[in-house]
Image 1 (tube, rainbow, N blue to C red):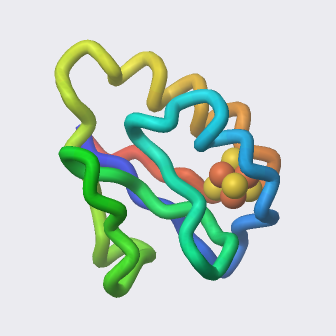
Image 2 (image 1 turned 90 degrees about the horizontal axis):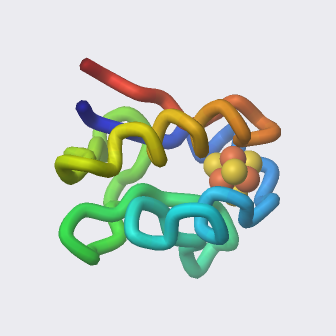
Length: 77
Ligand code: SF4
């Protein structure tokens, strides 16, 4: 499973980073980005920056995507 965020819709709630800091991070532009092995995938972000969800964290990724108030966290696969 992979995850990505549409930063153009992100409402900067910070919820994803609070719920799953191993999967999400708020960038210097105050928008949320996905993390891959600790690195923040902010270049370029969006659909082109997809992170592989580590084994055992799929449910956390799904729950956080559902909780995102902007509905802009997408799961693939
Ligand atoms: S939960 Fe959604 S709206 Fe809030 S910071 Fe994360 S991606 Fe943005």
